[in-house]
Length: 163
Ligand code: GDP
Ligand code: MG
Image: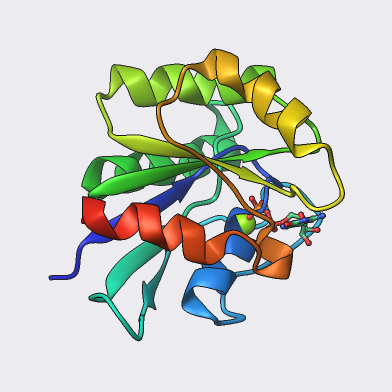
């Protein structure tokens, strides 16, 4: 069994784009419409150096409990519980949102080990963006621009020793 990393976060922060960057596939649906990835989606990150690990892209947590959004959220929770490490992905352009705060609280309540991955850091003031997320109090914060493959090697450098 490969170790498993789960990508978790609210819709549209770039989880599927990061999944693609890590697995180098176009498999995961990347879409502008929030909530387009409904099911858990698994892939493998194969590295030249370091052992491979499994990756799970989740549909995102909408905060809703009913209907499709509720089913998607339950899938995300299942992924969180089965993962060895969770990557909590947020949007560096939009900054912290209420839904981010809910997800943060949920991860802490579940006692999951997680890193905060600040995506979409291309073309923004990185220092200001990271300062905004500092109040989340997460020990490990990793800036990336998944759409441009930026920060991905640094992310892997942090993830691999945890698996
Ligand atoms: P998900 O809902 O969290 O899976 O988000 P997606 O991966 O589907 O991405 C949502 C949108 O954000 C798409 O339009 C992506 O092209 C865009 N996006 C993803 N990563 C980046 C990034 O690093 N920089 C910028 N500027 N946009 C990004
Ligand atoms: Mg997605």
